[in-house]
Image 1 (cartoon, rainbow, N blue to C red):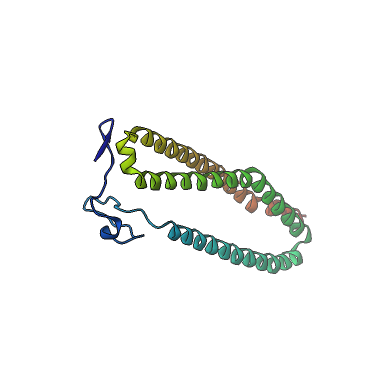
Image 2 (image 1 turned 120 degrees about the vertical axis):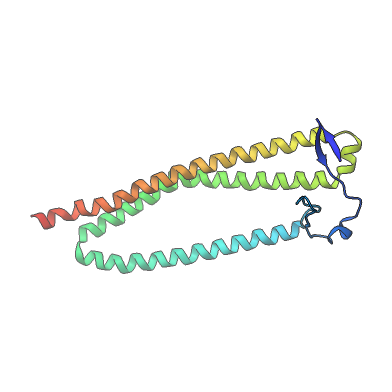
Length: 193
């Protein structure tokens, strides 16, 4: 164990990674601590797989929504043409508002989140790789501080993502109530006249 301000920082294994669990495999010891770092290639494959699933899911949802709009739009237009036109304008306005208010900010925050996660992974792998040199030159405190800075940046960005998503959900819930109320207001004069 190597210490920094009376805290354990590095724990070096006497066995090479191939004897601990094979190259690229993460195993846990009796305390549940990871003994080896996973393979970066596996992480890249997992990221590509996640992106592919998200893109496919987006395509299916987009196609389904388009079919629903076309089928229900035709039925709604036969019931009330003005209501159909109003709902199309309303949906385009709300989509634009969500994109303008939350879309750009979330895109930037998600980019920063991925960058911070990559920096943290790199810092942890580098500290693991050079643990002996860091310990020999008493660099544990600097590495601990750098890791702490990256982790704090990641936590701060995560807080920003949470608050932005909270605002998005509040906006979405507010517009959901309007969606039920406005069509009744528009159609009511036709039935009450």
